Length: 468
Image (cartoon, rainbow, N blue to C red):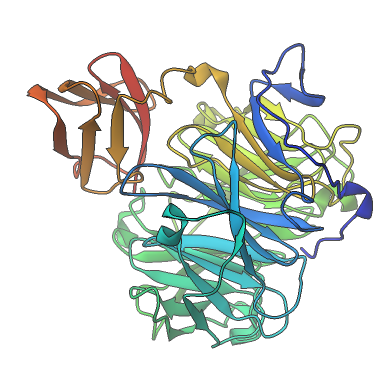
């Protein structure tokens, strides 16, 4: 949905807000529950007057974490390997004019950036350049540019196949435009899909869910303003519609995300809080049969704030809830239609009303457990203290790449590797390895399903692993 900026939300601070535990429902003046403040950078520090999307990259060479955030005049890159002291490395300026809308995704160590600025196209930036930035912040340039479209509202990427999907362009009736990015610095147009009209946001997966008719197929799920569309886009020349599903009290079907088992699809409607007047509504759909998707149930949050983007990691749903900030829901009993609020961090104190101020996006996929919150309140990093301060930030071992697919490398710095155990989100040990005081090991994880795991090294160091 087009977002209206509030000048009152733009703050120009001269110094970052540092690490503060959530205590008594507050952290440095921010209302909170279950999440500590790591750090905050204002829009002024990022040399911008408006903020929007965010995404992340983990350097496969050393496991360092970097955040990207869209701002009105470009894209900023921030080193959060020390989340308490983030380093603003620099900015890639907008390709044409300033815009309140920008979206970023990552594939093969490159960032792909689109905007609703006229003639912007898709910028491509080599993220490995962030490894050696002298005298930050600096001004970056594109490594490549794709001009097959002008403006776009959004971009989605299926990292399994190396295809990007430009969303809401001036082509294909606003439906997804397919771009082959397998060679990231030479993107090639590969068609599109126009039968269901304008798509606002989408998730594309190589399907491994309960509907075996589509196992291994590339499935596109689009949020199309007043409905959700499911399309088989395996053959880019002949995308095939599968199903369309709607629901009651439609305001604006904005964005959705699969649960990790692909049985459910969780949807946010951006305008229903305005049009109907209830608290934040999250819609749960049963996608166990892709040909016949069904509305399952709805959950109402604690405030009337407008919902924006949401993502699933393990059994948690992380939502950008505009004026209510980050909201995290527990999905562990979803099969029994039970959802509960796990915690929150509100970056817009003083109001939880429906509207477009404050939190645009959250990024919960960093292996460290650090979560980025972005929007007109600036750039904020928070963390769940239940992960344990020493568990995920120990310096004795490096683990990469992360996310990983088939092989995981663990390297010891000042000690040796004797034992590695991997646990799923239910606490069940799924893999175990023993070594003879090795300084470095490559571990085969090809048998693990996509999801989040805990890797325990020598029984005293734990790291979060994401498997694609």
